[in-house]
Length: 75
Image 1 (cartoon, rainbow, N blue to C red):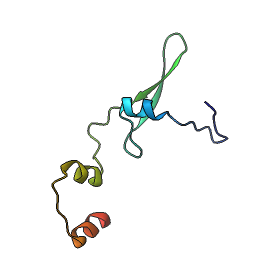
Image 2 (cartoon, rainbow, N blue to C red):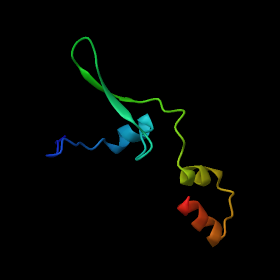
Image 3 (spheres, rainbow, N blue to C red):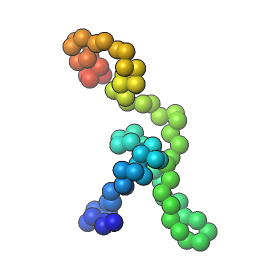
Image 4 (tube, rainbow, N blue to C red):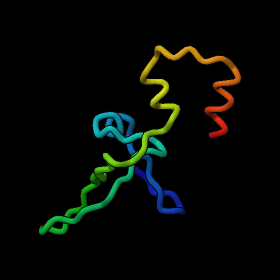
C-alpha cells in the first residue's frame, strides 16, 4: 500500500465494510501496543448524530414531495 505525498492511504473496501467505516461519519484512531505495533481502531461515536440522509434512507417508507426534499437538503 502506497502513502501519498499528503500522508494518506486508502483503507481497502473489505476492511471498511467489516469495520463499519463510513465516509464523513466514522472517526478512526491509531493505537500502539506494548510491542510497538500500530493498530487502526474505530472510535466509538454512538452519541454522534447520523446524517439526516442516512436516517431517511434507512426508513425506506418515506414518501417525500420535492418541496419536502428541498427543505431536508437545506437543513
